[in-house]
Length: 365
Image (cartoon, rainbow, N blue to C red; front, side, top):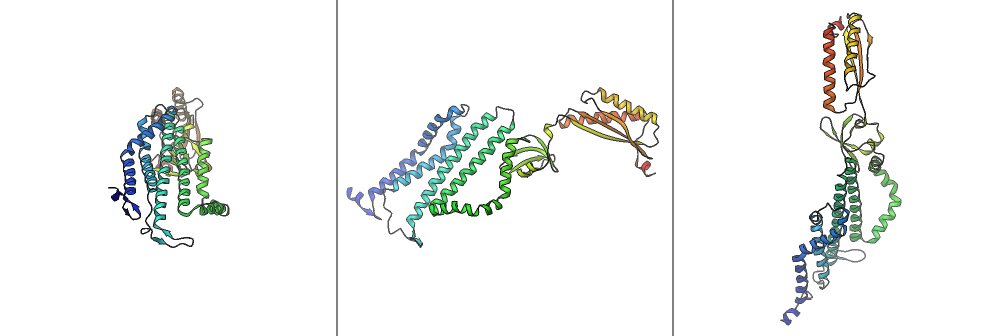
Protein backbone atom coordinates (compact mmCIF):
# COMPACT_ATOMS: atom_id res chain seq x y z
CA UNK A 1 0.00 0.00 0.00
CA UNK A 2 2.80 2.36 0.92
CA UNK A 3 4.52 1.61 -2.35
CA UNK A 4 1.38 2.62 -4.22
CA UNK A 5 0.99 5.79 -2.17
CA UNK A 6 4.63 6.69 -2.70
CA UNK A 7 4.45 6.31 -6.45
CA UNK A 8 5.01 9.58 -8.29
CA UNK A 9 2.89 10.86 -11.10
CA UNK A 10 3.62 14.23 -12.69
CA UNK A 11 6.24 14.93 -9.99
CA UNK A 12 3.82 14.33 -7.08
CA UNK A 13 3.13 11.23 -5.05
CA UNK A 14 -0.23 9.53 -5.06
CA UNK A 15 -0.37 10.24 -1.32
CA UNK A 16 -0.23 14.00 -1.91
CA UNK A 17 -2.88 13.79 -4.61
CA UNK A 18 -5.18 11.92 -2.22
CA UNK A 19 -4.53 14.43 0.58
CA UNK A 20 -5.40 17.36 -1.68
CA UNK A 21 -8.48 15.62 -3.07
CA UNK A 22 -9.57 14.66 0.45
CA UNK A 23 -9.24 18.23 1.75
CA UNK A 24 -11.17 19.66 -1.18
CA UNK A 25 -13.84 16.96 -0.99
CA UNK A 26 -14.20 17.41 2.78
CA UNK A 27 -14.65 21.18 2.48
CA UNK A 28 -17.02 20.67 -0.45
CA UNK A 29 -19.23 18.35 1.60
CA UNK A 30 -19.39 20.56 4.70
CA UNK A 31 -19.31 23.92 2.93
CA UNK A 32 -23.04 24.53 3.47
CA UNK A 33 -22.79 23.81 7.19
CA UNK A 34 -19.65 25.94 7.58
CA UNK A 35 -21.19 28.79 5.60
CA UNK A 36 -24.37 28.77 7.69
CA UNK A 37 -22.33 28.64 10.89
CA UNK A 38 -20.12 31.56 9.86
CA UNK A 39 -23.10 33.61 8.69
CA UNK A 40 -25.01 32.83 11.88
CA UNK A 41 -22.00 33.81 13.99
CA UNK A 42 -21.65 37.09 12.13
CA UNK A 43 -25.38 37.70 12.52
CA UNK A 44 -25.09 37.36 16.30
CA UNK A 45 -22.47 40.12 16.30
CA UNK A 46 -24.67 42.62 14.48
CA UNK A 47 -28.24 41.57 15.26
CA UNK A 48 -28.59 44.21 18.00
CA UNK A 49 -28.56 46.87 15.25
CA UNK A 50 -31.90 45.65 13.93
CA UNK A 51 -33.68 42.97 15.97
CA UNK A 52 -36.50 42.89 13.41
CA UNK A 53 -34.29 41.35 10.70
CA UNK A 54 -34.57 37.58 10.72
CA UNK A 55 -31.45 35.42 10.81
CA UNK A 56 -32.60 33.53 7.71
CA UNK A 57 -32.61 36.72 5.64
CA UNK A 58 -29.02 37.46 6.63
CA UNK A 59 -27.84 33.89 6.08
CA UNK A 60 -29.43 33.75 2.61
CA UNK A 61 -27.55 36.89 1.58
CA UNK A 62 -24.13 35.53 2.56
CA UNK A 63 -24.55 31.79 2.06
CA UNK A 64 -23.39 31.47 -1.56
CA UNK A 65 -20.46 33.93 -1.38
CA UNK A 66 -19.10 32.28 1.78
CA UNK A 67 -19.43 28.85 0.17
CA UNK A 68 -17.38 29.96 -2.84
CA UNK A 69 -14.85 31.66 -0.57
CA UNK A 70 -14.37 28.56 1.59
CA UNK A 71 -14.06 26.28 -1.42
CA UNK A 72 -11.50 28.51 -3.16
CA UNK A 73 -9.53 28.88 0.08
CA UNK A 74 -9.47 25.10 0.43
CA UNK A 75 -8.23 24.69 -3.15
CA UNK A 76 -5.44 27.23 -2.66
CA UNK A 77 -4.32 25.81 0.70
CA UNK A 78 -4.51 22.21 -0.51
CA UNK A 79 -2.58 22.97 -3.67
CA UNK A 80 0.44 23.90 -1.54
CA UNK A 81 0.95 20.17 -1.00
CA UNK A 82 1.55 19.70 -4.71
CA UNK A 83 4.39 20.65 -6.98
CA UNK A 84 3.28 22.00 -10.31
CA UNK A 85 4.60 19.57 -12.94
CA UNK A 86 7.21 21.05 -15.25
CA UNK A 87 5.73 19.03 -18.08
CA UNK A 88 2.49 21.03 -17.79
CA UNK A 89 4.20 24.35 -17.19
CA UNK A 90 4.12 25.32 -20.82
CA UNK A 91 4.95 28.84 -21.95
CA UNK A 92 1.81 30.70 -23.05
CA UNK A 93 3.66 33.75 -24.34
CA UNK A 94 7.09 35.32 -23.90
CA UNK A 95 7.57 38.51 -21.95
CA UNK A 96 10.56 40.80 -21.64
CA UNK A 97 11.10 39.91 -17.98
CA UNK A 98 10.15 36.24 -17.91
CA UNK A 99 7.88 33.92 -19.88
CA UNK A 100 4.22 33.73 -18.88
CA UNK A 101 3.56 30.08 -18.06
CA UNK A 102 0.58 27.87 -17.31
CA UNK A 103 1.47 27.88 -13.60
CA UNK A 104 1.26 31.67 -13.55
CA UNK A 105 -2.08 31.57 -15.34
CA UNK A 106 -3.58 29.19 -12.78
CA UNK A 107 -2.25 31.33 -9.93
CA UNK A 108 -3.83 34.41 -11.51
CA UNK A 109 -7.16 32.63 -11.97
CA UNK A 110 -7.23 31.46 -8.34
CA UNK A 111 -6.36 34.92 -7.03
CA UNK A 112 -8.98 36.56 -9.23
CA UNK A 113 -11.73 34.14 -8.20
CA UNK A 114 -10.82 34.48 -4.50
CA UNK A 115 -10.73 38.28 -4.70
CA UNK A 116 -14.02 38.48 -6.60
CA UNK A 117 -15.64 36.18 -4.03
CA UNK A 118 -14.45 38.50 -1.26
CA UNK A 119 -15.86 41.49 -3.18
CA UNK A 120 -19.16 39.61 -3.53
CA UNK A 121 -19.27 39.15 0.25
CA UNK A 122 -18.74 42.89 0.75
CA UNK A 123 -21.57 43.64 -1.70
CA UNK A 124 -23.91 41.29 0.15
CA UNK A 125 -22.98 42.94 3.47
CA UNK A 126 -23.86 46.32 1.97
CA UNK A 127 -27.22 44.85 0.91
CA UNK A 128 -27.77 43.62 4.46
CA UNK A 129 -26.99 46.97 6.07
CA UNK A 130 -29.26 48.60 3.48
CA UNK A 131 -31.98 46.13 4.50
CA UNK A 132 -31.60 47.20 8.13
CA UNK A 133 -31.78 50.88 7.26
CA UNK A 134 -34.75 50.33 4.93
CA UNK A 135 -36.61 48.64 7.76
CA UNK A 136 -35.95 51.58 10.08
CA UNK A 137 -36.80 54.10 7.35
CA UNK A 138 -40.09 52.28 6.73
CA UNK A 139 -41.20 53.22 10.25
CA UNK A 140 -41.46 56.89 9.22
CA UNK A 141 -43.88 58.50 6.78
CA UNK A 142 -41.09 60.39 5.02
CA UNK A 143 -40.22 58.59 1.78
CA UNK A 144 -36.95 60.51 1.52
CA UNK A 145 -35.40 58.17 4.08
CA UNK A 146 -36.17 55.17 1.88
CA UNK A 147 -34.60 56.81 -1.18
CA UNK A 148 -31.64 58.00 0.91
CA UNK A 149 -30.87 54.37 1.81
CA UNK A 150 -31.08 53.26 -1.84
CA UNK A 151 -28.85 56.14 -2.92
CA UNK A 152 -26.04 55.38 -0.50
CA UNK A 153 -26.37 51.64 -1.07
CA UNK A 154 -25.65 52.22 -4.76
CA UNK A 155 -22.91 54.72 -3.88
CA UNK A 156 -20.98 52.33 -1.63
CA UNK A 157 -21.46 49.51 -4.11
CA UNK A 158 -19.85 51.69 -6.77
CA UNK A 159 -16.86 52.24 -4.45
CA UNK A 160 -16.53 48.48 -3.88
CA UNK A 161 -16.63 47.89 -7.64
CA UNK A 162 -13.81 50.42 -8.09
CA UNK A 163 -11.77 48.69 -5.37
CA UNK A 164 -12.43 45.35 -7.06
CA UNK A 165 -11.21 46.75 -10.39
CA UNK A 166 -8.00 48.01 -8.74
CA UNK A 167 -7.44 44.60 -7.13
CA UNK A 168 -7.95 42.91 -10.50
CA UNK A 169 -5.44 45.25 -12.18
CA UNK A 170 -2.96 44.61 -9.38
CA UNK A 171 -3.28 40.84 -9.82
CA UNK A 172 -3.01 40.91 -13.60
CA UNK A 173 -0.36 43.58 -14.11
CA UNK A 174 1.35 44.08 -10.76
CA UNK A 175 1.77 46.98 -8.37
CA UNK A 176 3.86 48.94 -10.83
CA UNK A 177 0.90 49.48 -13.14
CA UNK A 178 -1.34 50.44 -10.22
CA UNK A 179 1.28 52.97 -9.08
CA UNK A 180 1.57 54.28 -12.61
CA UNK A 181 -2.20 54.60 -12.84
CA UNK A 182 -2.35 56.49 -9.55
CA UNK A 183 0.54 58.72 -10.63
CA UNK A 184 -1.03 59.15 -14.06
CA UNK A 185 -4.22 60.44 -12.46
CA UNK A 186 -2.38 63.65 -11.68
CA UNK A 187 -1.35 64.08 -15.32
CA UNK A 188 -4.65 62.95 -16.81
CA UNK A 189 -6.89 64.49 -14.13
CA UNK A 190 -7.84 67.40 -16.34
CA UNK A 191 -8.71 65.16 -19.30
CA UNK A 192 -10.56 62.71 -17.03
CA UNK A 193 -12.52 65.49 -15.35
CA UNK A 194 -13.39 66.97 -18.74
CA UNK A 195 -14.54 63.61 -20.10
CA UNK A 196 -16.59 62.85 -16.97
CA UNK A 197 -17.77 66.43 -16.48
CA UNK A 198 -21.47 65.65 -16.92
CA UNK A 199 -21.34 62.54 -14.74
CA UNK A 200 -19.52 64.42 -11.96
CA UNK A 201 -22.00 67.29 -12.16
CA UNK A 202 -24.92 64.85 -11.94
CA UNK A 203 -23.30 63.10 -8.95
CA UNK A 204 -22.81 66.42 -7.18
CA UNK A 205 -26.39 67.30 -8.09
CA UNK A 206 -27.62 64.16 -6.32
CA UNK A 207 -25.83 65.18 -3.11
CA UNK A 208 -27.33 68.68 -3.40
CA UNK A 209 -30.81 67.17 -3.79
CA UNK A 210 -30.41 65.06 -0.64
CA UNK A 211 -28.90 67.90 1.41
CA UNK A 212 -31.08 70.81 0.21
CA UNK A 213 -34.23 68.67 -0.34
CA UNK A 214 -35.99 70.78 -2.99
CA UNK A 215 -38.18 67.73 -3.57
CA UNK A 216 -38.62 64.22 -2.25
CA UNK A 217 -39.69 60.87 -3.56
CA UNK A 218 -43.46 60.98 -4.05
CA UNK A 219 -43.60 64.74 -4.68
CA UNK A 220 -45.34 66.13 -7.76
CA UNK A 221 -42.93 68.45 -9.56
CA UNK A 222 -42.72 70.51 -12.70
CA UNK A 223 -39.33 71.09 -14.31
CA UNK A 224 -39.19 72.75 -17.71
CA UNK A 225 -42.05 71.10 -19.67
CA UNK A 226 -42.08 67.90 -17.58
CA UNK A 227 -44.75 67.42 -14.91
CA UNK A 228 -45.10 64.28 -12.86
CA UNK A 229 -44.35 62.38 -9.65
CA UNK A 230 -40.79 61.66 -8.47
CA UNK A 231 -40.32 57.89 -8.16
CA UNK A 232 -36.55 57.58 -7.68
CA UNK A 233 -33.50 59.77 -7.06
CA UNK A 234 -30.37 58.02 -8.30
CA UNK A 235 -26.65 58.76 -8.45
CA UNK A 236 -26.93 60.25 -11.94
CA UNK A 237 -30.57 61.02 -12.59
CA UNK A 238 -34.07 61.43 -11.18
CA UNK A 239 -36.95 59.30 -12.49
CA UNK A 240 -40.32 61.00 -12.92
CA UNK A 241 -43.66 59.35 -13.70
CA UNK A 242 -45.45 61.90 -15.89
CA UNK A 243 -49.18 62.63 -16.07
CA UNK A 244 -49.27 60.53 -19.25
CA UNK A 245 -47.80 57.63 -17.16
CA UNK A 246 -44.53 57.69 -19.10
CA UNK A 247 -41.23 57.24 -17.22
CA UNK A 248 -38.88 60.17 -17.78
CA UNK A 249 -35.21 60.21 -16.71
CA UNK A 250 -33.94 63.70 -15.92
CA UNK A 251 -30.23 64.34 -15.13
CA UNK A 252 -29.73 65.54 -11.55
CA UNK A 253 -27.83 68.59 -12.83
CA UNK A 254 -30.97 69.70 -14.66
CA UNK A 255 -33.11 69.08 -11.57
CA UNK A 256 -30.79 71.35 -9.56
CA UNK A 257 -30.06 74.09 -12.13
CA UNK A 258 -33.53 74.44 -13.68
CA UNK A 259 -36.45 76.36 -12.19
CA UNK A 260 -38.33 73.59 -10.37
CA UNK A 261 -41.89 73.92 -9.13
CA UNK A 262 -42.69 71.50 -6.31
CA UNK A 263 -46.45 71.18 -6.73
CA UNK A 264 -46.77 69.05 -3.60
CA UNK A 265 -45.60 71.93 -1.37
CA UNK A 266 -48.25 74.40 -2.48
CA UNK A 267 -50.84 75.26 0.14
CA UNK A 268 -53.57 76.38 -2.29
CA UNK A 269 -54.52 76.18 -5.94
CA UNK A 270 -55.46 79.25 -7.94
CA UNK A 271 -58.32 79.16 -10.44
CA UNK A 272 -58.52 81.89 -13.08
CA UNK A 273 -61.40 81.74 -15.56
CA UNK A 274 -62.85 84.08 -18.15
CA UNK A 275 -66.42 84.09 -19.45
CA UNK A 276 -67.10 85.77 -22.80
CA UNK A 277 -70.65 87.09 -22.75
CA UNK A 278 -72.57 88.22 -25.80
CA UNK A 279 -71.74 91.81 -26.69
CA UNK A 280 -75.40 92.89 -26.71
CA UNK A 281 -75.98 91.93 -23.06
CA UNK A 282 -77.40 94.91 -21.08
CA UNK A 283 -75.48 96.13 -17.98
CA UNK A 284 -78.26 95.07 -15.59
CA UNK A 285 -78.09 91.32 -16.29
CA UNK A 286 -74.28 91.49 -16.35
CA UNK A 287 -74.25 93.01 -12.85
CA UNK A 288 -76.79 90.43 -11.64
CA UNK A 289 -74.59 87.59 -12.97
CA UNK A 290 -71.54 89.04 -11.22
CA UNK A 291 -73.35 89.36 -7.89
CA UNK A 292 -74.86 85.84 -8.07
CA UNK A 293 -71.45 84.28 -8.84
CA UNK A 294 -69.91 86.21 -5.95
CA UNK A 295 -72.70 85.03 -3.63
CA UNK A 296 -72.25 81.41 -4.72
CA UNK A 297 -68.47 81.43 -4.24
CA UNK A 298 -68.90 83.05 -0.83
CA UNK A 299 -70.98 80.07 0.33
CA UNK A 300 -68.42 77.44 -0.73
CA UNK A 301 -66.25 76.20 2.14
CA UNK A 302 -63.59 75.02 -0.30
CA UNK A 303 -63.17 78.53 -1.74
CA UNK A 304 -60.93 80.91 0.22
CA UNK A 305 -62.04 84.45 1.01
CA UNK A 306 -60.68 87.17 -1.23
CA UNK A 307 -62.04 85.81 -4.52
CA UNK A 308 -62.70 88.25 -7.35
CA UNK A 309 -65.53 88.36 -9.92
CA UNK A 310 -65.71 91.44 -12.20
CA UNK A 311 -66.30 92.78 -15.69
CA UNK A 312 -62.69 92.63 -16.80
CA UNK A 313 -62.91 93.90 -20.37
CA UNK A 314 -65.31 94.38 -23.26
CA UNK A 315 -65.31 94.87 -27.01
CA UNK A 316 -67.86 95.44 -29.72
CA UNK A 317 -68.75 91.75 -29.91
CA UNK A 318 -68.24 90.40 -26.36
CA UNK A 319 -68.05 91.23 -22.67
CA UNK A 320 -65.29 89.56 -20.62
CA UNK A 321 -66.06 88.41 -17.06
CA UNK A 322 -63.05 87.38 -14.95
CA UNK A 323 -63.43 84.90 -12.07
CA UNK A 324 -60.43 84.33 -9.79
CA UNK A 325 -60.55 82.28 -6.60
CA UNK A 326 -58.25 80.16 -4.41
CA UNK A 327 -58.97 76.71 -3.00
CA UNK A 328 -57.16 74.57 -0.46
CA UNK A 329 -58.10 71.40 -2.34
CA UNK A 330 -54.86 70.02 -3.80
CA UNK A 331 -55.81 66.49 -4.84
CA UNK A 332 -56.64 65.95 -8.49
CA UNK A 333 -60.12 64.41 -8.46
CA UNK A 334 -61.64 66.58 -5.64
CA UNK A 335 -60.16 69.66 -7.34
CA UNK A 336 -61.76 68.73 -10.67
CA UNK A 337 -65.08 68.07 -8.94
CA UNK A 338 -64.98 71.56 -7.38
CA UNK A 339 -64.24 73.12 -10.77
CA UNK A 340 -67.17 71.23 -12.27
CA UNK A 341 -69.62 72.36 -9.57
CA UNK A 342 -68.58 75.99 -9.95
CA UNK A 343 -68.77 75.85 -13.75
CA UNK A 344 -72.22 74.24 -13.75
CA UNK A 345 -73.48 76.84 -11.27
CA UNK A 346 -72.15 79.68 -13.44
CA UNK A 347 -73.98 78.24 -16.47
CA UNK A 348 -77.16 78.05 -14.39
CA UNK A 349 -76.74 81.68 -13.33
CA UNK A 350 -76.30 82.78 -16.95
CA UNK A 351 -79.43 80.87 -17.94
CA UNK A 352 -81.37 82.35 -15.00
CA UNK A 353 -80.69 85.92 -16.17
CA UNK A 354 -81.03 85.17 -19.86
CA UNK A 355 -77.39 85.95 -20.61
CA UNK A 356 -75.79 84.20 -23.58
CA UNK A 357 -72.15 83.36 -24.12
CA UNK A 358 -70.46 84.99 -27.08
CA UNK A 359 -70.58 82.84 -30.21
CA UNK A 360 -68.27 82.62 -33.19
CA UNK A 361 -70.99 83.95 -35.43
CA UNK A 362 -71.40 86.99 -33.23
CA UNK A 363 -67.66 87.50 -33.17
CA UNK A 364 -67.47 87.26 -36.96
CA UNK A 365 -70.32 89.74 -37.42
